Length: 212
Image: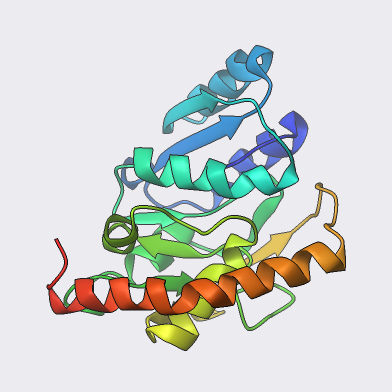
């Protein structure tokens, strides 16, 4: 989880606790950009008894969030890596059970997960990836707009996008970060499309067992 807002983080963790059926299956990694806040985050996570790690890193701008998620994905130990920020909340459902039910749909377990939101889009605002997917590529996302990037690769390139049914899990998003201008987003979408053939080829090779 990337976090910039302490009060929102506390509410988010409380919400994740209330909607979690088995904390023993959960590891929460948090990356923050204010070093003096480490103790606050540690106290919140200890309060709710999650296995956790809080990492400090100076931020260089809004687009740095992709780097945050890449670092956290490589540090994590779980079978499923869920991309969250401190403004995501579970509206209903058991998120631990819903995510773990996606395991072993494919023999190689290389896949991405669409997590439904209260205002549906064709891509999930908080996608999850299998450990095997991250191990294959060596990262979670290509820069900014990880949600869009994951969906384009998983749905349109390799056809490995598992949808969690809305009766099992629905999220809601309370925006706390600034909206990036449309011109920047358009440029990023072009860069994402340029990466599709390379990323798709690497994932398909992993699926065939031809890439170490």
